[in-house]
Length: 127
Image 1 (cartoon, rainbow, N blue to C red):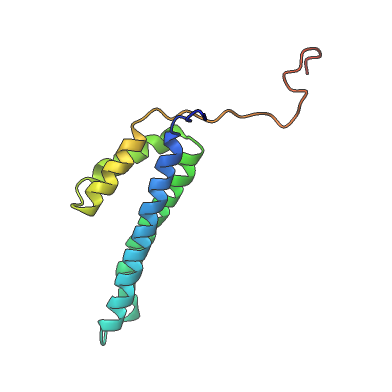
Image 2 (cartoon, rainbow, N blue to C red):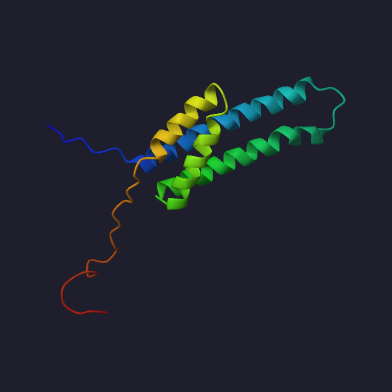
């Protein structure tokens, strides 16, 4: 029998953030392409109306995913706030926000970090 490992909540929250970033990238990318394809006589700068918010949200979730993988406390707090705000985006945002909150409110345990040297912590000489 194999023993089950407890869930690593910060890694699950990072996966949730990456998934949300991918959904935002796909949504805003398709909206921009369709908006530019159907618009006639509209300046190319009008695409920025769709590209800039999309890029902001994608960058936000990617940076939160990276920080959550490192188990940073501010990433946990930001994930809770973002998840709570996403609950207002019915129906898809509610599901994704609840998933993000479920993984963010749990206790994040930082991974054990080992030093690169075998002599660190060895009894004997102190540096």
